[in-house]
Length: 306
Length: 282
Image (cartoon, rainbow over all chains, first blue to last red; front, side, top):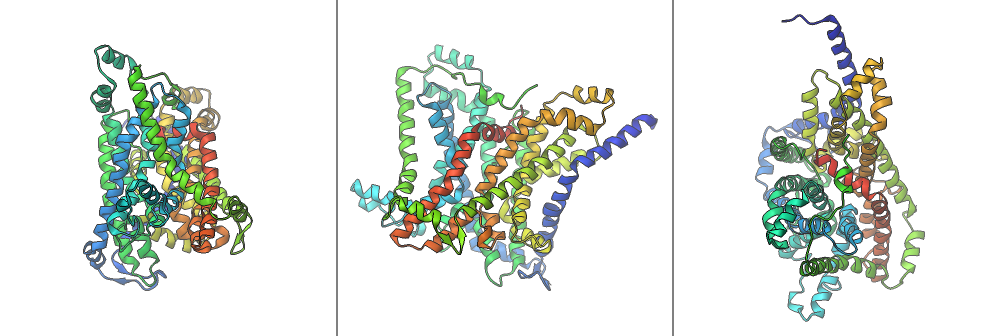
C-alpha cells in the first residue's frame, strides 16, 4: 500500500493537467452562466429587489410563501403539465404509428418523412402565429370549415374563451411529433425483423404486432419520451406567448410566460421571480434525477432531452 | 468502430404487410396529410390576402423602424453560427477529456454537467439579465450566442462523450507509444475521427438557434439586432390588424419559415443523427 511508482504518479499528474485543460472552456462558461446563476437565484430569492438590483432588502422566506400561495403559479404549473401531457399523448400515439409505418412499405416515403419532421424544425414562434390566425372567431380556418359543414354551433371563440383557449394551445402538439418519431425510428431499427416475421407466420395481424409486440418492446423509448417531454414543458414559452399571450385572464399561463411576465412587469419584485425559478429548478432536477436513475439501469438509452 | 449513422441508414422493411393493411396505412397517411395541410393552407391563403403576391414584395422592400427585412435573417444567421461554433468547440474538447483522460474529479464534474440537461431557459432569464448587464453584453449578438450555447452544452457534451466512448482505447495507447502527447493524440487522431459527430452537433445547434425566441426577446431591445423570431412578434404590432396588413404579416411568416425548411431538407441526415445520438448509445 502507498507504494506508488514515481513514474505512474507523474503520468497521473500529467493526465490531471490535460484533463482540466480540455474542460477549461466548459468550466468557464458553466461557472459564469450556470454556477453564478444558481447562486444569484438562491441569494435573491430571499430578497426584495427590483430590476436595477440596487439596495436589496432581506425578506426571508416571504417570496417563497408569496409564490406558493399565488393561485396563478399553480395554474401555470398545471397548464405546463397539460402542454407536456398533450405532447406526450400525441408523441406516444400518432408519433409511434408514423414511426412504425415509415418502416414499412409505403408510397412516397421520403415525402411523408420530411412532412412529419418539418413542423418540429420550424421556429415555434411561426407555428404559434399561424395557429393564432387559424383559431380566430370570424375568419379563422377552423371556424370556416365548421361553418361550411353546417356545424355552426361548434364554431367557438377558440382563443378568447378561457374554456377553449388551453385546448387550442394544446392542439399544436399534434404537429410537434418529429422528435418522438426520431427516437422511435432509432429504437425500431434495433429490432430484429425475423421476430416480426415469425409473428406474422403465426397469424399475427398488423394491429396485433402494433399493440402486443412492438409497443411493449419500445418501453424504454416511451420512458425517454415521457421524461424528456415533461422537462420540455418548462422550456415552452413562445407557443403560449404568441398564441394567447397567457390569456384570457391567465387561462393559458404557463411557467415560461409566468416568469417572463413577472420579470418584465414594471417595478416588480424580482426576488419573487427568483423564488419561482428556484422552485421550478427543484422540480426539473427531480425529474432529471429520475430520468438518470431510469436510464442508467439500461445501457441502450442515455437521456434524451428534447 | 460504431457510428451513430447506423440507426438511420438501415432502411429495410420491418415486416411484410398484406394488401388490406397497406390500404389502411395509406388511409392513415392521407388523413394525416389533410390535418397537416390545414395550417399550411391557412398560412398561404392569408399571405395572399388583398394584394396577392404583392404582399411578398412589399414585405421584402418595406423597412420597419428603418430596418430592412433581410437584416433579421442576417442577425439570426450570426447568432446561429456563433452559438453552434461555440457549442461544438466546447463540447468536443470536454467530451474528449471526459471520455479518454483519467483525471481527478472527472466523475463529479461530468455528472453535474449532465444534470444541467434539466435546466430550462425561462428560469435563467433573471440571472442572465444581471450577468449580461454586468458584462455589458446586453443588446449585443454575443449575449444571445452565450445564452443559447449555455443551454445546449449539456446535450452536446453527452453526445460528444458518447461518440468518443465508441472509439477504441487502443488509439490513445498507440499514440502514447509513438511518443505523442495527449494533446497531439487529440488533434491528430481523435479530432479528425470525431468529424461526423461534430457536424451533427453544429447543424443541430444552428437549427435550435434559429428556433430560439425567449433569449432574443429578453436580451435584445434594438430593432437592428432583432432575429427573425422576434421580428414575428414585432411585426404583429407594426403591421396592425387591417386585412391588407394581415396579408403582409402572413407573407412575412412564410418568408421567415423558408430558411428553416431549406436547412432541414438539406441537412436532415445530420439533424436526425444528432438528436438520436444524444439519446441512444451507439
